[in-house]
Length: 361
Image (cartoon, rainbow, N blue to C red; front, top):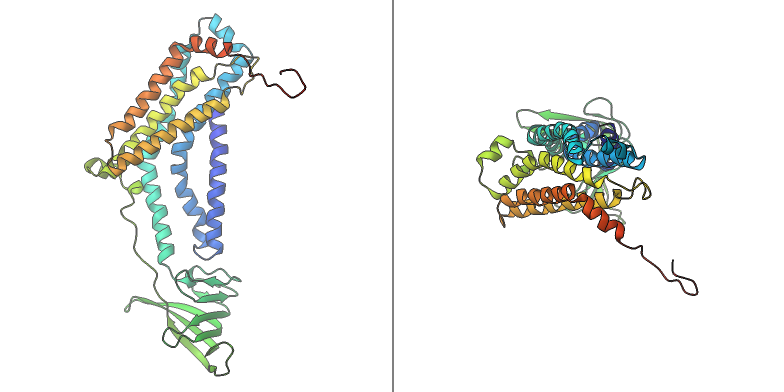
């Protein structure tokens, strides 16, 4: 269990670091408020864990049992009556514990946390550009030509010096507005947000020409355009499991069986880890680590591909469980006939490479 926790923690830190950098980049560009970066990241943790925990369990068994084989401790245990089936029985205890955790995460926690993360992301998308401004940075609208800058933000909706460069939609002339301070105000009757600028100037004209119009003002109010406020409610990954069970749509059934199959994944990889961890002391502790990881990734990739095909309606949901059955049979083959395959593997002669002017090595 300690090996599983160590491996899972390292993988979680790596994945979270990559996602954290992505969110920080969005926050720096003004697409997301810095205040919600950590919150969104925490809501994404359950979706990471439901895939990381089976891999951590798999690698934990490989490293733990591999050390026992390397130091000949497993040989002593086998001489005392510890069979491979008995070892598998002992391994199923931690495997069932992890399977229950993964099941709870996939069926209950991940849909809820994913929905909350999407809700925050949608609120950020629907918020105005002035609500996601970063002091000291120019912010450009995704769909327009407006560039906005402020040197400071004091409290909620109170801006320091404001600079706005935009293009007049009717005359196509450049508009530049500068003010000493700005405040965002929401009118509940009109259901609209306004930006109120104080003590500034507004210039309008074409670059390179001398026909600029200058307008000074003490207070100037402008309507803040709303972004797309459509909230995602049909994201299949965030739908409650109870709703998926009542639906007969292919993509809903695919998501349902994917959630139910993740605990099975933890059990199957444990069955694979017990025979794959058997190494010859002369081969080293990590002799089968790389092939085992490739096998796990192959298992997960096939399962994901089949789930995608089920979601498209190409095949039935039975195909997901057929993949599990194939790897269960493969694991049983290694458990029952492991000694036979080990003898075959050990009889394979080493690859000889003939170098120019030298003997074969």
